[in-house]
Image 1 (spheres, rainbow, N blue to C red):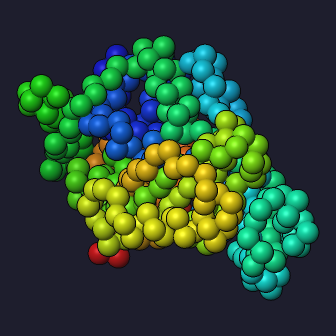
Image 2 (cartoon, protein in one colour):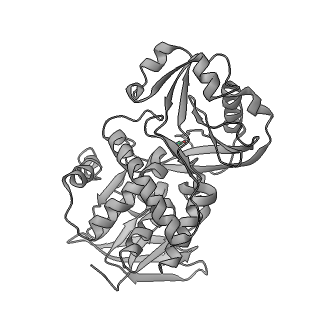
Length: 371
Ligand code: GLY
């Protein structure tokens, strides 16, 4: 299906860009409306690709594993279309534990390689002595979302003809009340002009702000504060995923440290002394030597969360409006499968059994009857 009326993507964050890119690759006209690119969770996240190390379970683990398998090919497409590297590193992730027993009870223990203290010292020189056991997930990795992936995706989209409306805020999504069909979106441009645009096909990729446009959707913000440290190059080869704090080493020695998880903060912006102190304490608790590495940047953002912490994918309560939101802690990991799934859905390609099952599991309807 090739359309001339553009598919409108509501949100220029990672999910919006990934879907715009897939649709443009299929020769669709695409328009991305983005209020403020810096607020996008894709810029805020640490870029861990770690369904196993993050201890996911059930259908979310399966979804994460499927997306992880798609990532090399997805990244290759973006790198081809943009000419830029995305900074993918399958560096493996170590989850440390105080005791061997604790590790045995980790949800994904059976999928990791058990480590004793000697192994831990080999994998993470300088790890604090109270960590006596661990699990190594060699199949997990990371991508430099903040400095590379987002930029590469933007460039790939531009090179494929995607139009961008940056600084424009979508104010309402209007539906025909009788048949619940998408009719129009109204937006306020960066210059302050309010525009009403007829629209028949759109994708909601508005992250933590999704409920503002479609009130039925149970998406709420979970604030995360982060910082980065400049370590010596190669000081850390694996990601360390500790309880409450993780350290993600980039190729050039920059270490991204995350993250607070603040459910009561709502959309309150800014760093807090408490949040930053917790991160500093987490660094000290994991890798004391990193306490002396200079902090480079500090930032915060809002994870888009749902009551069961799984994403909302596929149909919405409004015909013509598709959902790709609510990815909570796993947006970077799930962008590959989300963009493929949504592109197939919008293109009306017959679903495979596997796709149908994912769309059923992560449909917004799972919350509809719980109201
Ligand atoms: N995936 C890590 C986080 O959301 O903090």
